[in-house]
Image 1 (tube, one colour):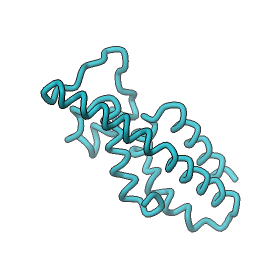
Image 2: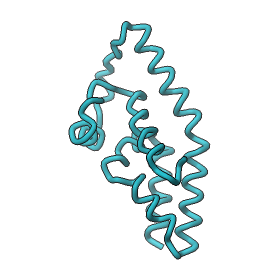
Image 3: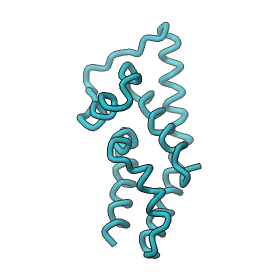
Image 4: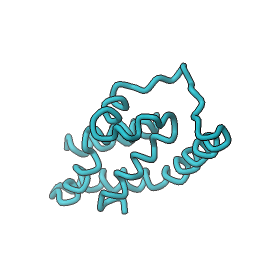
Length: 126
């Protein structure tokens, strides 16, 4: 029961702020979702299917936001505009500092590309 409710909590966080997709990389959520597919409890499976379907509905909007940010970077000769009002959260900094250091120059919606990469590695999101 708790696993299902935690999945729904993640879904609400994703809907509130898409940057939580990036924070979920640090928590290995995408790898753990594949393990939850084998869970015996129906409630967990229903919550997981609801989460996957809701994320699938959100992805086209997120891809267009990421594409707009990429287009803006291309218009500025590869330089991303610095927005001082939105500093990366601690979770995002941890993701960029640990195993994704080569992406540390990315900011804003371009960070969602990291989440897309992790989703493509996961068998449940393919």
